[in-house]
Image (cartoon, rainbow, N blue to C red; front, side, top):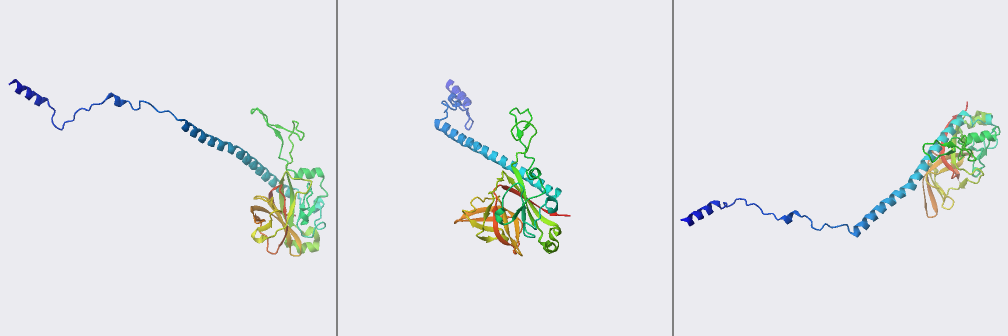
Amino acid sequence: MNCRMQNAECRMTRAPRGAMRPARIHPSSFITDRSPRGISLMEVLISLFILSVGLLGVAALIPVGRFAVVEATQSDRCAACGHAATARIKAQNLVNGDWWGFNPDGPVTAGAAFAVDPLGSSNFGGSIARVNYTNMAPALAQQTFIFGDDLLFDIPEDESSRPRGLGIDGTVGPPVSEGRYTWFLTVMPSAAEDAAAANNGWQARKNFTVSAAVCFQRDLTGGEDVPLSPGGGDMTAKFLQFSANAASGVERDDWLLVCGQRQGGIPVAQWYRVASAGTAGGTTFVTLHGPDWPSTYSVGQVIYMPSVIGVYTTTVALE
């Protein structure tokens, strides 16, 4: 009897089939990593290599940034000098030979292009004449053709102090121009006035295309202009070829003065900027950007002046 009752109690306490039994969790399962792994020497070396490459890239940007700042400053000063020059040309009537004492019909062919360069001594390869002002004092010529806003200043190390002006001898005082930016003129009389000028002389010429060539650190003693003789190309397409040895210094963004002749053998000259320059097989190929070159114009010498960094052209009409 007792055995039957015990068996019955056992059957009553036994869990039914299909019921969820509590899972047994061992305490060691809560330990995810008994021995954490450190950084190996190889990983440290790879990290240092990647970091050094990044630092070298940052260091390489410093001189590039300085060069970009210098280029931007030079372009800004060039533009300011060019705009000031074109304003002076009109305000001071610098193309009027009656005012300033030059007669282009005398030293140059009637109606021909010429250059007005009071500071320099370039002969422009003999392709165009160089004319000076006989009624302009040297002091006035320097004041006119030297950009006056290129001033000298001393920047103190103390950022709270203001910059101080410097004289030409380096003493503190009113700032003076450093004289690095200068300019000169090239003048093209209008071909439409040839007939009137043939009867009435220089006074009949009223319209001119005038270019102010801005120079940076120009050698005013002469010998800077390099005459080049084209060995091929088509100027109407603004494409020329030169000997690689002669045009070795010509690079992109340089300026070239293309000289030639129009009908009647009258010299002409126009400025062009180098859009691209490349050398192959001993020949330098140059593509130019600038005004149209009429098909009736012949091409003579091309004058290369390394110091010219900008050319600003305007039309002047004398009253």
